[in-house]
Image (cartoon, rainbow, N blue to C red; front, top):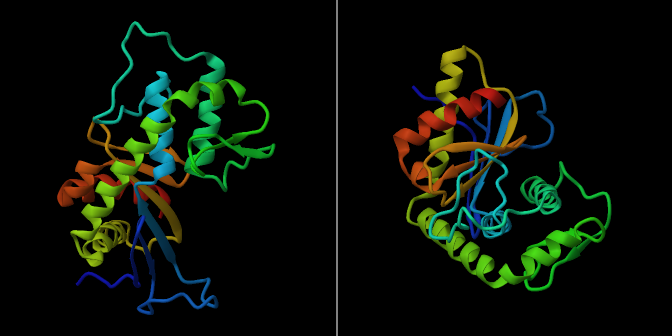
Length: 232
């Protein structure tokens, strides 16, 4: 029989967080650090979506394996490509957006006008990117918020347990295959409207998965299992 894997924390406005451990107590009490634990956060983060919308608007080609977003114009092939400076500055901004704790800025950050509190760039060393993204503030925010709202609606249309079980099942299968409990790990999952179906590492502890793949229970189980295998 498939073992129970801790407690589901429930949905919130941004998605959900699922937590599990190697025993049947659902809540970690701070005194059982020797027990295997796992924490998976799923979202379609507005800051991440804004960063990708700006990438597409500016014609930035990196990360090379990451596809474009659906329902958002792609720059023409004959359009002027982003300069190396803008590309480098965007990559730094992308890393800070995806995993801010792992990529702190070496200088103070300043909010960029037009993006509310969603885009903050280094006060020095990001002048080219700051100027380049300014004309795209309204369109990128509109796209990101609409995509996020669609994700939230899709989560609310399913019970929290269904979302939780997608990960718990993959972890249980991994444990059966390797003959041991999963090690403690943390994973962030960004569910995004990419134009291609797949799953990609976008940080040390973060993957991006196409929304259509996430909704396909069988296919997602097969896609997420190797990811969990790398961490657990």
